[in-house]
Every structure is written in structure tokens, then in C-alpha cells.
Image 1 (tube, rainbow, N blue to C red):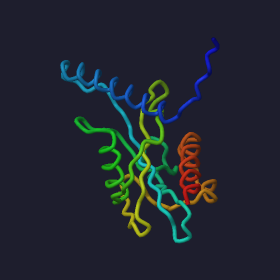
Image 2: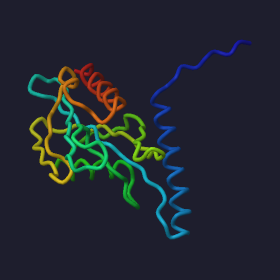
Image 3: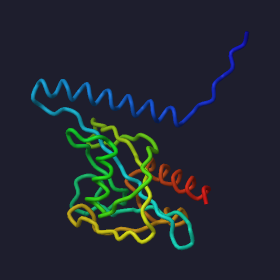
Image 4: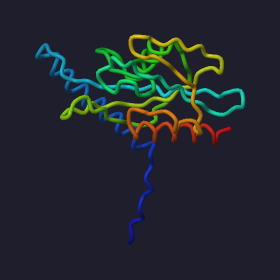
Length: 181
């Protein structure tokens, strides 16, 4: 009997990667705890979008301060490191609140990513999407960012992002949200 090929299911792959990251982090955290050192680092990103007055999706971009060691003066979404005893979603919510002063709803995992923090070090991460209110007031942390913009898909090309993978993920998010309208 012939076997049928199964279709690739991105949602299942995302869940699997998330569980794998959690298990790897948990294992390393337990070993680090016994050795009394912290060896693991995981990042989260909060890709926060809203619907503008024309009901088109816009994503929040922040311009990194020129004093930042990694990716100075480039645009990004909110994000940072997960703290000890913090789950991934809580870390993303905290980062969005600290960096932009926003509390958002409808948190979902979009995909996993990696950040090159040195020539030989990649740090794993998880991208969450969330939705802000149309009138959400952004208050950036001036130690980390110098500017912010709510950007539509058409305007995205005018912003130098920290990498092309981020651009691809933002396009994916905005296109999905645009189709739901």
C-alpha cells in the first residue's frame, strides 16, 4: 500500500519548537542551578499591531538608541531576554510594557528566531504577536530607543530593520491580519 505524504503544518511545527526550546532551557536551568551559575539565555519579541482608522493593520517599530551595542540606530519590535522564573509569554508582555508602555491582548506565538549576539553565539527566541488598542499611547524607554512608528505594510520598506528575518516575519503578520478584515 502506498503512503500518502502528510502536509506540512506550520502551527504544529511552532508548537514543537516551542516545547523543544522549553525543555532545553529547563534542562540547562536545572544544571545551572546545581552549579550555581546561569548559562542559558532566551529572547522573546512582541510584535504588537493595531488597526488604524482605515482598519488597516500597523505594527509598532522602535528605533534602537545609537548607544546600543547590538544593532544601533536600526528599527525593531519590542523584545529582550527572559528572566529567571519567567515564562515566555510573560517575558514578552513585560518587554512590551517596559519598552513601549503598552498592555496588549490576543497573545499568540508567531515563530521562533535566533539573534547573533557575537560572531560565535546565537541566542534562541520566540516571537509573540499581540494586538494593541487603536488609541494606545506609546511611551518609549529613552535608554533603549529614540523613536517609534506605527507602520503599515506599504511603509515597511522605508525602515532599516535589524535583519531580513524580522522583515519577513512582520510582512507575514501584517498580511495575515489584513486578510482577516
